[in-house]
Length: 198
Image (cartoon, rainbow, N blue to C red):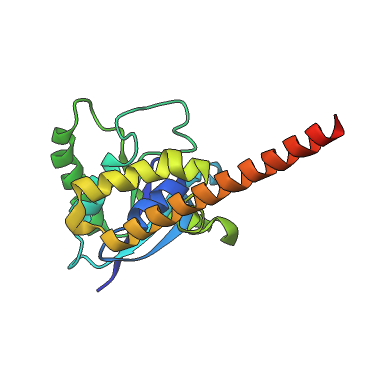
């Protein structure tokens, strides 16, 4: 039976790429989540993860979430990037609270991650959905998302869709080389035109 949980903490492009890379995750919806009972201004970047708990338990999803964003820093951008797990049932709330009490032992400083009842969701526009999968060569993806995915391959290999990630890394590398070659060719043409003008 498929279950769902919401996760927020950093850029939702990053969070989406992390969860979309995991075995047992059926679907990831990227956008903004507001906790139940909060004002509309309380939307923050997050994803809803649909998962099969027989293939990947909530415990592992929470642990991976904590290790792929700054779950111990109460920085000034927490309004936009709330460190959170959004739950859909009372049982899930109790389970996540217990998981966080265990996982805090993995960190040197206290977690700022909160557990909130899900309130509302606003999806991001289609052009930003699956952002990393569509744009693995983009500088943002190379700098912020790919290191998280490489960490997953090293630390959580049995939970990761390894072939999919390696294919994305290879595609990104090829696209970066192509873009580099194109820039060099454009520069060479411009330089030649400039020299001809002399």
